[in-house]
Image 1 (spheres, rainbow, N blue to C red):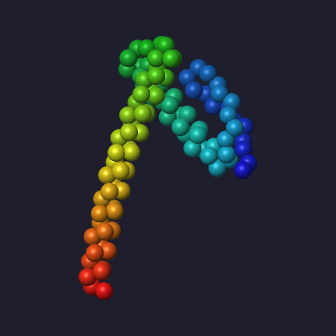
Image 2 (cartoon, helix red, strand yellow):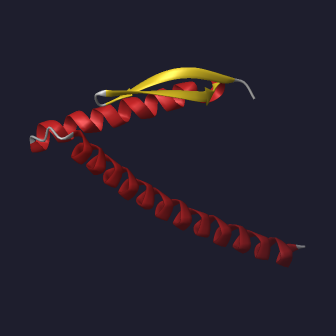
Image 3 (spheres, rainbow, N blue to C red):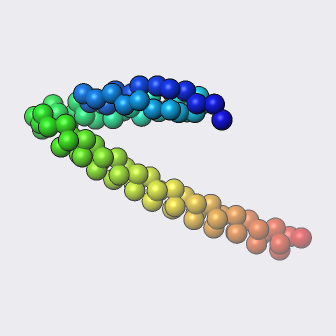
Amino acid sequence: METLAIRLKIGDREYPMRVKIEDESKIRHAGKLINEKLRKYKEEYGLDDNQDLLAMVAFDCMVESLETNQVNTEDSEHIKSSISHVNALLAKVL
């Protein structure tokens, strides 16, 4: 597993990281999205405290993650139900 040393700027700080080469673009994209959310909240709420802004971004990301997990769970259950139904139909035919 080859790693790459990168520096990622989040807010007003730079973070040195070692990442897998194949994950670099994904990690840089995540950093970009975090910075965009920071700017959005800073403009929207007039906050200058980076700790408050980062906490808001973390909270927002967690809510999005929970919503995505719920949708994925519902989709998985629907797929399992559909497969069971198709299996039952095939069993009748065979």
